[in-house]
Amino acid sequence: MAKKDNPFQTRKVPWKKDLKMNWGVYLMFIPIFLYTLVLHYIPMFGIVMAFEDYDINKGYFKSPWVGMANFVELFSGSDFPRAIFNTVVIALLKCTVGFVMPILFACLLSLLRSKKYKRTVQTSSYLPNFVAAVIVCFLVQEFVKQDGPITLLLHHLFGLENTNLLADSNPPTFWIIYLVMGIWQGIGWGSIMYVAAIATVSGDLHEAAAIDGATRLQRLTKITLPCIMPTIVMMFVLGIGTSFAAGYDNILLLYMPTTYPVADTIYTYTYRLAFAAGGARDYSLSAASGLFQSIVGTILLMGSNYMSKKASGSSLF
Image (cartoon, rainbow, N blue to C red; front, top):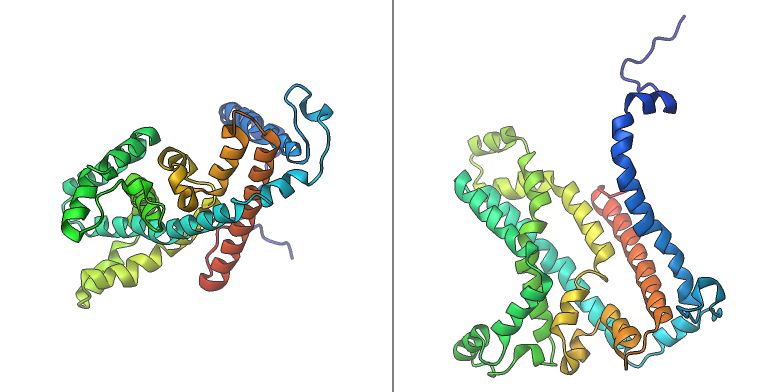
């Protein structure tokens, strides 16, 4: 008996035939391919600098090989444990409070009945993301300096010391300022994925729940959040993987020598050693730090993806 063909089975098209049929798509893909190749894959060869005493005049192939010496120098620095601790604390704040705020904001937007007001609020929340980090950090410095409005408000309402908050070397002042600044700047942009996911939730589910007497809050917790959980898991896994690296530019603009004990992260610590110490440039140390952070980020990405798959059944890959 002849075997019937599955009508839903995808037929493989020869590559040459597909190229002839969709040559326009391949043509549009060429600039993206070249961009990714030149700016992302070819520079990966620079990893060898982490194992060399790199000299820009000698290049990759003539610089002396030092093995793990750069990693030993990086890890044996007196301030390195402090930088690790600050990096972990800031990453935890971003992956907890900073991660939850865009989800909460998207859920609140979904509860608004006026579409015009909802669009206005949503569009306005995107604007801080397009403000340059230099301007955002300058505004923060002005608001929390000794005679800044936030400093004076906290002084008169709660009796806090009237001083420059960014110069406070005691935790958690700098961490809170950095966290609040990041939330203000990224809450709208970070909520885009969640708003789009909420929009795909079937209205029939909400209508049936409303008929059964469920409140809007109950519908939010029992219908909306479970339906967008795969999106939340995906964004959480991505956030864990980049938590050690993201936002270091803001720290560079905000911190000062008095706040190194609470603000110095792995990136800024390496920057000071490699680029700011007496004008000397140590590219090998920078490469070692970058490779170390890439390995840690990869481990965190794989680990968070595995835990998410085990806990919720949803994973990024």
